[in-house]
Amino acid sequence: MTLSLFELTLWQKEIRGSLFGGGNPRFDIPMILTLYSEGGLLLDELITNTYSLDDINEGYKDLRDGKNVRGVLVFD
Image (cartoon, rainbow, N blue to C red):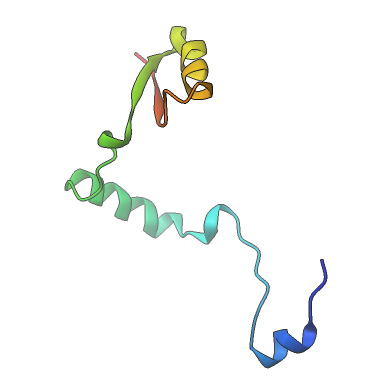
């Protein structure tokens, strides 16, 4: 990687690494769960199909064929 130390200093830029987007799990997870439970985050509507563990190969095939955008593996 090449970079200009002059630009970093002049424009007050910084280089930062992050893991998982730099979120704060102690804050973000409870907030997301609250949004979901209150109906403010519509996750169920994003699921295109559900698969049992026995049908996992079909799920991968559907994903590869473009039939499945958000498949969910359901454990009974």
